[in-house]
Every structure is written in C-alpha cells, then in structure tokens.
Length: 120
Image (tube, rainbow, N blue to C red):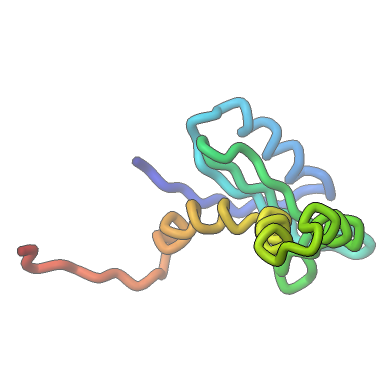
C-alpha cells in the first residue's frame, strides 16, 4: 500500500469535483477536505472500498455539522430506542469512515513513529 497527501487550492466546489473524480477508483481510500471560505461552508468527503463515499459539511474548526433535519430523522428512525438513535447519529457523523481511515491519518508527515526492535 502507498499513502499520499496533497495540499491544494481552488475555487469553492473544487473539493466536490476532486472527490467525484476519485470516486471512479473504487479500490482507493481517500479524504478530500475543502476548507471554509467567506460565505461558503467547508466540506469533507471520505471514501473506503467497503463503505463507499461519505460527505459532511464542516465548520471553521473542521467539526462535522449535522443539520436539524438529519437529527430529526435520527429521532424518527429511533422511535424511542436509544440504540437506534445512536446508530443514526453515528452514520450522520461518518464514524465508520473515521474508524477505517484513522490508521492512514496517523501515517502523515511528522506523525510519531514507533520502531520495533524485537518482535516476539
């Protein structure tokens, strides 16, 4: 496996174009992040071969923003069952994508490295 990280700049909406172009390569794991700009929310697209693509709107700090309609949907789907509400909110936050992509994030430049000198 290989890992790459590329910083980019472009007009608002470029992130969606990049994510759409990469989506055609179904075997890739990737994230595309578009930082917010004046008058435009940020976005993050995450993709894994098993889960497909996930999109979220982000705030200036990079936090995922879950809209009122999505929260209401989680309540309705949960129908009073806390586990079902939790499941729907987990989907809205993209937790499964975060779990699968987290090991690749740790491989970023400057990340701490643990050298194993002896494996038993």
